[in-house]
Image (cartoon, rainbow, N blue to C red; front, top):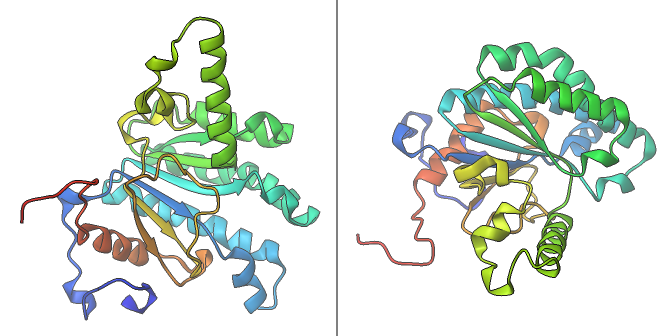
Length: 259
């Protein structure tokens, strides 16, 4: 069971995995990697991996909510993903339409609110409608926030934030000395998440160990867990393993903690 984890100490048997309910990461962010490779290993088209990955999103969303996670951010489509084959991009643009059409009732049942961040105005109209409808339909839910990063890139996000701040300075609304870390955070796409804007735990599947232009500002003190399975293979049990690993890290935030 625990052989999926890379480079992290884990218990020697599943019976030893006991999560501390008082130390659940408030914000988990996941780089959902490996849909295409999962499909290719099975001699299937890449879009078959994305379809299976959509089912995994549904399963992991409910599992994270049941664990008590406050925000689950999923990296669904990056600003660089437009470079992929046209048929794959077209399928990914249909993802929100198909996903929310079937899953919004379950989200409401589980009190999960949808948020989507990214350059949404650049998405096809049908995709935009699906996204905004899902956010509207779940706006009264008070439980976990399911936060999709869709047409999102962290460098572009930071550049946009800096441009907005520069305009405020030029307009005399702000002095350069007024610019703080908190002010910059308030200009980023995660600002609406409030105290949960920065992820406590970032998980990447498929064995890759890189950031891929994801939440570069927000991850300053995040814990990372890299896992071998491709995203379509990811299970609630693997999510629990990642949380277990997180709970056994010592988070010092640049300082020292007493033993």
